[in-house]
Length: 460
Ligand code: PFF
Image: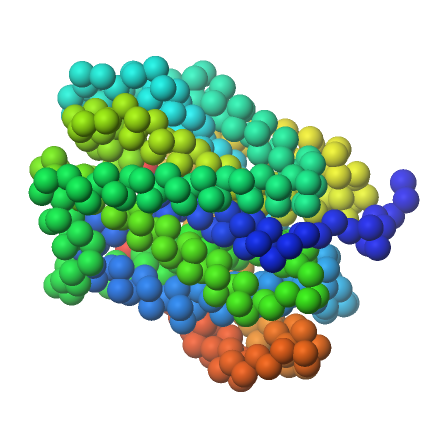
């Protein structure tokens, strides 16, 4: 088969398209499912402040480094590193990103499948009349049941593959440009509903009033880990999307816009959730079940609950979908450019092989209890090892590469579009990616592999 023709490489068609796609990757279950419960477990406002600090000081620079690497090389993550550092082992960093995308997608589609089940339940009024116990046993029963979650997971993977199959401009860009504004609209409606609930003000106090006595070292580390997961850092997604950004676009502004959008949605998710939690007298530390157990219960007790639960689970599904497409694209870009499999075949092979691993993730929740190492089943294992090991390690190596090995000229060239932009921040950026970010990330990483022990891992 002929080699991949790089002159025919697809790209984003507009600035808005890039931002929609990259923000779509960043904004996902991490913002709406993971952020509120982790913030809830770690004291709300104080956690938010630390999170904000990490997003600005580490998140933006790492994201920008990924964009720089991707756009400079115009390749998939492995090809990009091979291209920028020929005859070295740096390509392994690209490989790590692709592997992380593969693993994350396997367990992420399990949860994404749950969002479809809950969307279906919302449509068919399936939460009606259920109390806390029933809601929680329904979730447990569904999650561990095998067949139903598998069907939803397969449907979700199909939607993901359908969009990726169509390419960048006509697939990813086209759909994220519709889905992201819809997502914003839904979350704003939910926020308005939440803050107008009697007694909801306490939820806002919880989210915004920093109480540092509730923040532990563990919470600080979780904030850093969450910022990585939420920004889609360290798994090749942003290198891949960066490689489709036009040479005329301003990478710095793109990274800041995407990060700001991600942060705003996480905060809005908090505003949509905590006032409701407080208004109905529920503890905010409900954990991972917050979205699948606590919220449906709250919704069906409030006026207009049918409508609000419906749009909430629609929101969750959309958020998940715009993230899964970015992960599948990582694998597809790699297969089509490095293995010379055409895009359509790559999409099918990629989606099917990830789905096979995904099936085992879903089954490890219940029907196949033997799929575990120690106390973690396959799902937890992939969740834990990607968030705590692969992403920090990938992010760390990426900033080290961009800061120390890629060449300052090349990096500055990308930031300034070959001298056409001012990019006055470039020296500060270089300082951060050389020193601050690697040290910060190294701390989370050492924590993740258990050399430091601030917090224990992501069980669900
Ligand atoms: N950032 C996504 C979220 O917050 O849900 C998750 C994710 C997407 C992680 C894409 C990694 C990735 F490459």
